[in-house]
Image 1: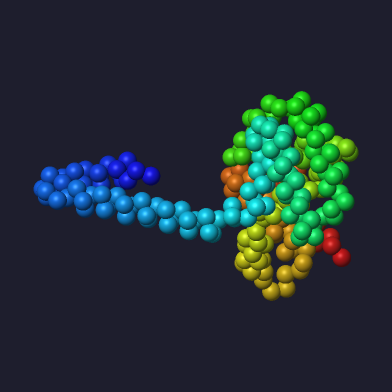
Image 2: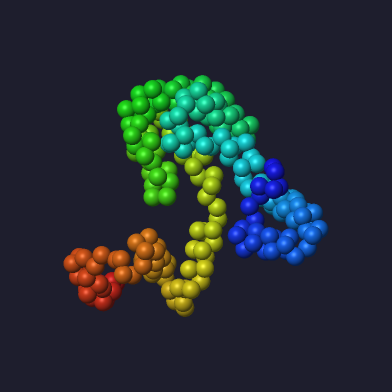
Length: 225
């Protein structure tokens, strides 16, 4: 990287120019400053790669599940899937005798289902669409791809951490009171999860059935033996 072409920002660049006008030997300091900026960027990126999951071969090859990348090359996608299968075999997640069948099913899926639905793969938007729902639609109902679908489901859960489970413990702690029965706790959690899923109380659809059920809740409670 040519340090003279390194962009340090408008304000910083302006300050360097003004400093050079006032000091005759400022050119050397200017180059040293840019060199230090370069070293900082290199070390920062290196540190990010150390912490990023991209350092793992499995994560890098999971790009085979990106519908947009999948459409570009069957050969590259098959090679990445083969690497994923090898790593899953090494960790005991699948049996090696199933791999050839999975590769065959992938080839059949690519040549038939993918090509016939290429527009949906090309237009997939990861910001508004869910990958699990996408493959649920394109794979789950195809008996000829059942082994491939099992592998897709297996690798899609790898990125799921424990954050949602731990948040659930916090919610339970907030709603639990004395003499609270299990069914009451479950009901409150269902309500809480639904409110979060729709984006808040203002987005809840208050249907006629819901209002009638709420109005008769007290009577239902009294009728319980």
